[in-house]
Image (cartoon, rainbow, N blue to C red):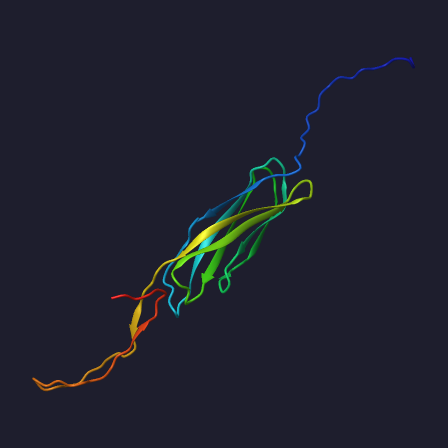
Amino acid sequence: GLGDVYKRQGSDNFTVEPATTTVELIITPSNPLVYNITIFNSSYFQISVNATNTGNGTAYSTNISIEVLSGWSSNSSLEECGDLSKGMYCLKSFNTTVPNGTLAGNYTMNVSVTWKNPNSSISTNKQTINVTVVSNPLIDVAEKEISKEVADGYWNYIGNFTVLSIGNDVLSN
């Protein structure tokens, strides 16, 4: 009848997505080396960046970006990854050109991953990598040949030659 009360029992499984998530960066190599820079020749290095969603929520509109130094250039400054569910990853490569005339030494560069959390807040994970421009002391003699015939026992001045330092580091000895 109308006064009957029915009790229903049962269970249902459901998942609650957290408000925020975490995205980790792995950069390979972690310390790129750049060789053969001279006053005339530039060089480049490549890094691979892996952004992995290690949290429990989805990382929406995920992108990876790099900040290059003034005068340096890259094939891309931002790569889009889309939405990364829990455990998913995105792998992108960047080729960065180091200009001619760059001195030997260590330089830092930032790599970031940015995403929108399930609660619509924006998060960023930024890492700094060290780029080593390897010393390349190099000389060049401008003249290709200097010659003069001199008789035995005589001294004669035959000219000058020019030595140019064309590498990216100081010459010594």
